[in-house]
Each structure stands twice: as C-alpha cells, then as structure tokens.
Length: 160
Image 1 (cartoon, one colour):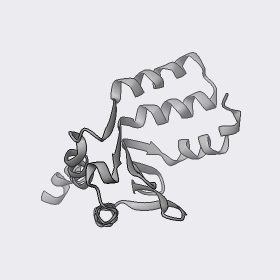
Image 2 (cartoon, rainbow, N blue to C red):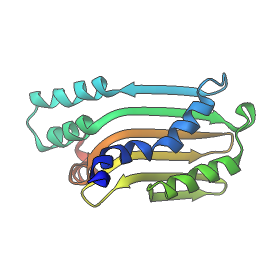
Image 3 (cartoon, rainbow, N blue to C red):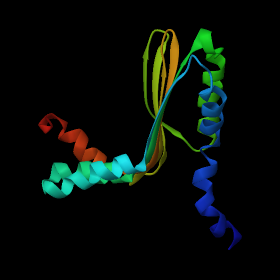
Image 4 (cartoon, one colour):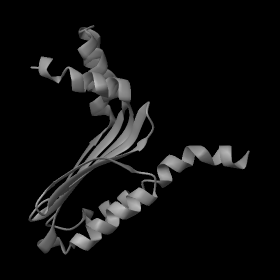
C-alpha cells in the first residue's frame, strides 16, 4: 500500500539530477537559459481543433503532453563546466531510470537522446549535446505517446 502511495512521486524524484544541474548553472552570466511552460503547448494543441486531419491530431496530442521545456546552454571554459561533469550527469541519469534512445558521435561531439518510459509512452525526454565549446541540455517534461511520435516521424515530409 505504501509503495503504491509513493508511485506518483517517483517520476518527480527522477528529475532531481537534471534540476540540480540546471540550478548549478542557471545564474551563471555565461549560460543561456530558455524556459517554455505548459500554456504555450496548450495553445499549440488547441490549434488542432481548426484542422481535423490526422497530422493535426497527432501534433496536438504531442503538444498537449508537454508540460514544460527548458534549454540550458553552458560554455565549458567560461562557466567552469568540465567534460567529466557531463559524463557524470549522463551516468546518474542512467541510474535514475533514463534510457539512452539515440546516441550520435562525431569526433569529440556527442548527442544523446534519453527518456524515461516504456513502449507506449516517453516521459521526461532529455537531449544532451556536447559540442566543441559548450554543452546544451534540452529537457522536455511531460508524457509523449509513442503512437503519436511514430506517426509524426513517418509523416514529417508532409509538413510544410
């Protein structure tokens, strides 16, 4: 019973690693930070009511599932961020239940797409991009249906 009562808090606790990293660098004058909150995504989702196409419905479902999006771009040298700290962040995310969905490497540059979830939905998606001079962390909080994401991926050529 106690375990079931704590389940709603498990998803929030798994983002502590990301929150601590964001908090550490948020006030650094060399860091670029962008936050977009739920009402913006709700507005985008509401636009689908004017277009009843499958494309619009899938887009609306994805937008409605996003609660917030944050981008944090941290320059290594100016902000005092080390590549070891980024490696440690990735390691702790794996321990906290994030799964590496996609990894792209090109020399020293690396992009990881990570998320929590299962075969039906993704939760709390992260994109970690290590580039020559800076590290970018894109955090998307919410629940995204794999069915909607698959539809959008398959039909992306139809979007103008």
